[in-house]
Length: 181
Image 1 (cartoon, rainbow, N blue to C red):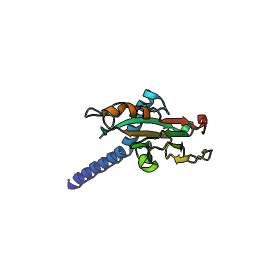
Image 2: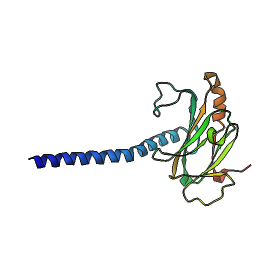
Image 3: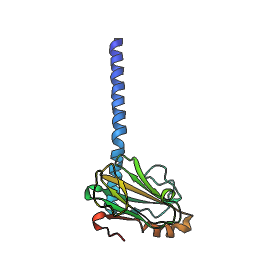
């Protein structure tokens, strides 16, 4: 009797562990896919989608949003080829976070790295890319689909129109359509 009970408990523990491992592995990819589809539906693949207002307690797109930044999203599928990511000169904190399809971050472009008031251009490429880079910083993505997650600091509600103008200057251009200046 005790042997059967121990065997049952062991089976439950193994089932629980298998379910937990499965959840931890697959949930981030499912969450990424859901958000990817939502943003692509809003703006299209390779196009920036901007949030134009500050967040409050009702914001639910992702956990722990900041209420002093405006957010921008761009979903890229590198199966369509490399893309050039461009930011204008920005005079305050900003960043573009590069997120692979399991929601792990693999790269950043940011004011803390690239400095303030400097335009930034980078080439996002699939693994193994060996083509032209036009002298741009090359960022090799570990997955085909990438979420670009941009943030621009706001210095109060009256600053939102200026930050929106900065958001509108974010670019994601397919390399085949890019013309270096």
